[in-house]
Length: 414
Ligand code: BGC
Image (cartoon, rainbow, N blue to C red; front, side):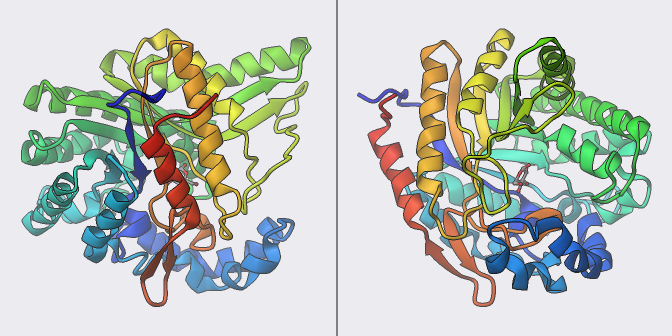
């Protein structure tokens, strides 16, 4: 008998815009308008990375920044799920693309709904539990043109879309994720202005998080009404903030923990059946300085690999007394040299947290396939499965088989 419960869910995650291909939404328009600029800025942003020599051709090519056909997962989902099944996955997280379902305000496209019904069926037929994300950052063009999530009626628009899909799939889906990483979206789109709709400033940031809070609450209520047995959560981006010691660092840690990890959760915890967490970052704070990390191991994107952080984040969540799913955790690693250890080490930290009483019930590696990494384009390679974007051929990476072994053994020795 392994250390994880029999019912622990193992799988991977993805999002529509990053894999499907053929998107017509606010991002696809923004990509076309910004591709040349992003290619020009690449060396300044990524030139310092050890991976630069290997990524530079792609990163300096404007085509890299246009999602276009992506992985053609829209067409190839069945074969991709065959691979997930062969790799021992028992759950899969994916998102519905709002712009496909409601391309024109108030009009739903039945063909697209039928498409997602097939996606759900294909997962079920392979014994894979679907986790459906309602919103993973992309907006229908009609809504983006009306100020997107800052529109006063945003939560009502979101509620109307949610009602439609919950009525369609309410009985087929047990697990719903309303919103993906509200904090990251608000930060990049409404504070730093580096993603569409390129707004900046604190006021926009707070307005954005407030709008997403409300949208979550409404969606929760609507889904529950349609299917009282549904389990509904949100996927939050959580970082492990570590204090280097001393009064200033401790205060800073406390403040950013509250602002980043706890604020959204505190606001919505009465409307949550589980907490979804996406874990990628550790941030060591020394005095007033952030990111004083040792960076002993970094990914192709320069992000530190720090599995212990996941353990600390999980223990902090214990106070909410809710089941937890790791809805994303992954590494950009084109040569597949870190990924197997990355997965093993993070799962081992989850194990440690479970042993200390945190109710973790599932792990979703990000991502099943290499995919379109937003403003960075295609060069970061997160996939368990490598994608050749010219031919759309897939190749399972060795680390994916290591993950399979972990799932089969279901037992990581701490
Ligand atoms: C997002 C994904 C993204 C991943 C890696 C998460 O913040 O939800 O869409 O691809 O991080 O950057």
